[in-house]
Every structure is written in C-alpha cells, then in structure tokens.
Amino acid sequence: MELRVLRYFLAVCQEKNISNAAESLHIAQPSLSKQIKDLEEELGVTLFTRGHRQISLTEEGYFLRDRAQEMIDMEEQTTQALTSSKLITGNLNIGTGQSFEIKSITKIIDQIIQITQQVHFSFYDGNADDIEAKVNDGSLDFGIIMGDRPIEDFESLILPERNQFYVIFREKLPLAQKDKVTPTDLIEYPIITSGQSLVNDKFRNWWGNLYDKVHTVANSNLAYTASLLAGEGHSVQISYNNLYDKKLESLTARPLSPKVTDPNIVIWKKNRKLSNLGNLFLEKLRDSLNN
Image 1 (cartoon, rainbow, N blue to C red):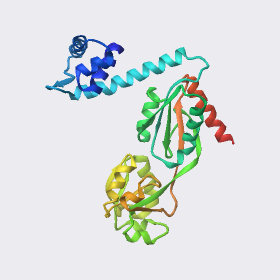
Image 2: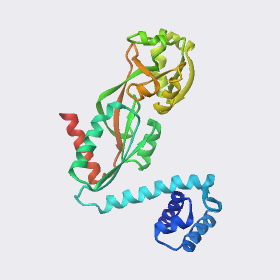
Image 3: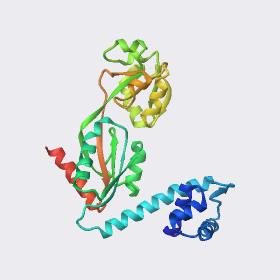
Image 4: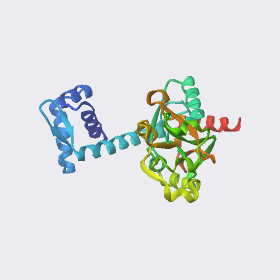
C-alpha cells in the first residue's frame, strides 16, 4: 500500500463521494476511482458500499481508515523528526484522560503557542491502557495517564496536582445533605464506576468489608456519558470532580471519606528521538515542576 493511495482513500472516507474527493485532491474522478478499485483488489476486500449519491464504509473500510490514518501520522512524524532543524514547528500528539487537574499542561501548551504559530497540538482522549499502547507504538508523542500504574517501560514525570474522587449524583438525593460520603452512605445506591480494573482495585480497599454489598450497575472509561446516567436521579457516579455540567443535569458532588486520589503522570517512549517541539514541551514541563 502506497501512502499516496492511502491519502486518496482517506479523502474518499471524508467526502463520502468519489467526485467530491477527486475535486478536493485536484485529480480526475476516473483516476481516483481506479486507484480505489486497485486498492480493493490488492487487499482482496470491499472497502465501500456504493450508493446512488453517496458511498459508505464497509467493516473492512472502517478498519483500514483507522490504520491508514495511523500510518499517515507516523510518516509525517518520521519525516518531521528527520528533517526538522532548530525551528519549532510541526505537530505534537498528546493523549490524556479526563481531569481538571492537568491545567499545568494546557498552560505550557498556551505558552508555546505564544512563541510560534507554526505548531499544532492534537489531543487524543482515552483511558490509561489505550494511551500507554499508543505512546508505545509511536502514534502519540506524550501521554498523560491517571492512577497508580507500573510505568517502568516509559520515561515519566509526575505532576504535583492529584485527582480527587467524588460521588456525583442528582442534587435531589439525600446524599446532598452530607458534606462527605462514606462507604456506608452508598450501599443503598446503584453505583457507576470506572471501566479500568486498576481503579476498581483501588476501591476494593476503600469499600473494605462492604465490598460484597456494592451494587455496580455500569462502568465507563470516560466520565461524561456516565454523568448523564447519574443525572437521571437513581444511580450515583464515582469519578473525578469537575468533569460534569452541574447546571445542565442538576448534578452535585461530594468528596469521598476517607479521601481517595490519583496522580497525573506524563509518559513518553524510552529512547525515542523527540522533535524540537517535543523537546520544548518537555523543557517547559520540567521548568514548571522545578519552580
């Protein structure tokens, strides 16, 4: 598979129409159609379902779309690393979980943007397992993971801010009368938790001998959708604070007691040559930790 053809394929995915894709690529429509047909024959699969005015991806097409984008990104990062000079240019890919306590990272990014307009930052939202995998395979330059995890396979820096777990629930529930919430307070409620096993292992200790009585009804890797379910007024969500719209869903939050917290850890791949932009980001991050 040639990268040029993969770019053609991604353009068709974007436009969902061969003619429009050909126009955006500034090539002839018959030529583009042949390139896509040749790609399907090379792979031995059908990538698109052809309609009258619009085409749609098959299951194999969706799979190739994701892999093709990763290959294009990898090629661009490789070219950038090989050809860059001392100029601060290019794209930095950062994966992160959801947390209000990474404001120090966005502050650093804002400082870099003020220095030069020839940079671009791509954010990828995901859980820690997903981010670690993408940092390891090179599709992310940096990852910000939350929680106590083994990180010996990566270079890392721990941010000083920690994430505190809260109970999030509809404000009409009796829990709203409490300043803090204990394990005993939650036994009567359906619980929404994180989808990550290491987070749940942490809460085994917090629940103590009440763990077998916990009624878990849902889990989620990211917080927002779970908060919508909590907003229905029957279940309660255990998550970091400040990740929900209090006004929209009439939600409120109370801290857990005893307090439960997670660290924020910046990771990047060992022995990877960083771009000038990546080195500047890391330099400013280290400076912020030393001040």
